[in-house]
Image (cartoon, rainbow, N blue to C red):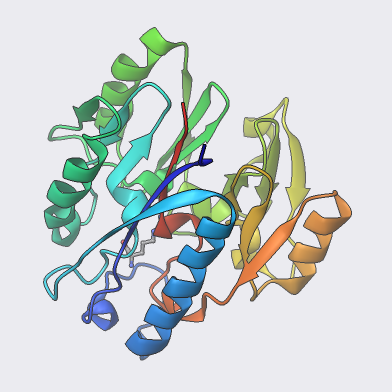
Length: 257
Ligand code: CIR
C-alpha cells in the first residue's frame, strides 16, 4: 500500500510573474525550476507516494505552490480562497483532484486563507493571520474542524509571507522554527528545533512518513535535523525560493487511510 498521494502542479511558464510580498523580483530560470520540481516529485515517489501531477497555464504564475489552495486532513479537505486574487483561478483543478479522495469544504468570502498559513500537528491546527489569511476564514475552518476533534489557534504572522515560512511540523510534537519570526510561547507543549541563525528561511520542511524533504540551501539547519535523528532528503529549490516558495508549498500530501 502506498504511503499516500501527493498532489503537485506544473511550474507555469509565467512563474517569473509570480506574486511577491517580502522579496525583490529577480529573474527565475523556468527550465531549472521544472528540473528541480521533477527531482522533488521523484523524492516523493521514493518515499512511497503516488504523485498526481496537475497541469498549469500561463494565467497562473504561482500554480506550482499547490499547498496554498487546500488544507488536507484525514477526514476532509478544505478548499481555500487564496489571499492573492490572482491565485483564485487555481482552485478549480485542485478541488477536482481532491474531490476523488476527500469530502470538500470551501472557504467563502469574506474569508481569505492560503494553505501556507495553516500548520497542522496532530489535532492542533495553527492558523496564521497574515496578508493572505484572515479571521473570517479561521472561523469557517473552526466550524468545519471542531466536530472532528481539531483545536484551532490563531497566530499573528510578521516579517514573512506565511506561518509556514516561520514554523513547520517535523512530527506531531516536534516543530522546526525561526524564533525571530514566531513567539515560542505560542507553541508551548511542543519540542522545538531552531533554524541556524544564518539561515532564516530554513524553517520550512516537508514531513513525510519516515523522512523530511528539505531544501539543499540550508546545510547548517539540515545538520541540526540530522543530529535529532531525522532522515533528511535534500532537494535543490533555488528557483521556487525566488518566488517566495519552499518545499511544503509544492505538494498536498494525503495520507493513506
Ligand atoms: C505567492 O506569493 O503566493 C507565491 N509567490 C509564493 C507562495 C508560496 N507558498 C507557500 O509558502 N505556501
